[in-house]
Length: 322
Image 1 (cartoon, rainbow, N blue to C red):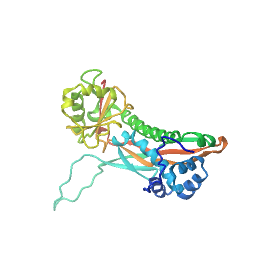
Image 2 (cartoon, helix red, strand yellow; image 1 turned 90 degrees about the vertical axis):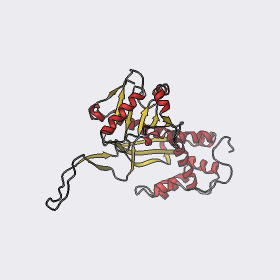
Image 3 (cartoon, rainbow, N blue to C red; image 1 turned 30 degrees about the vertical axis):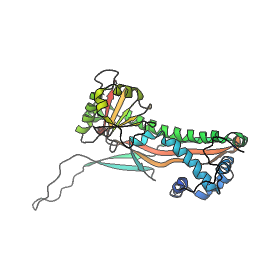
Image 4 (cartoon, rainbow, N blue to C red; image 1 turned 120 degrees about the vertical axis):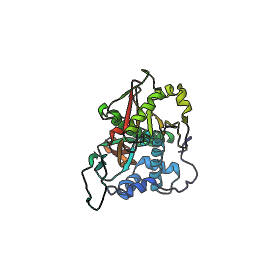
């Protein structure tokens, strides 16, 4: 069946690295041949992908579906820019956090003294989400192919958006007394986020001994900042600006401005993303053949599994009433 508007080239595709195959083969719990190739060969959705892409084998079709999902997810991936990402294969990871303390000077008359200078935090893999793009065989056969591609992209975007949402819930859930300075910071002008508020929040984190590098704002607050001369004069676009994703550049204060409508409109978080919290990524966005026999549906299952936990909450400052 000939379709129009498909991103699948009608020319013979060029070979490229198969990120899905690499990820599966590095995961001891998955089997590329049985869990992916065998299932895909009998799946109407993947058969359609193989025909549309003029692929020579099913591995290429599997890789193409995965690439569509990842490309779409990247458009929503601000969550990965506001937290420390840690790949893992373990269900639980223990973080030992060094406490501030005095060093001991070593001399001939004084032996080495070692005290307990660590606290510990355990983070479990307690977040797992799936999204299925599964349809009847007749639908897969008849619908224009770009519609099927859109279903894959939608799944990738939704999973990435969920990751960002969970990270924001984590930050917004930190008790006021555990933030930098031991309290929230009230906006100088109620209902407006101003440069002076950002400076004050940054200083609160700096006083805790950390280097804030991220400022998370809601779209409503961006309008406030663009009306503030101090912000305009202190803002510049860096190499990693991606306006479509909400990465708007940096200020000379060293803060990367991250805009997301998932954040609460009346709050602004400024933090050191290298110490504030961690995201343990056990299974990054993955696509695999999927079927629902009782409903006679076939397609793609997208999934993600990770863990989240706060580490040094004094590396976070929160502006409220803005």
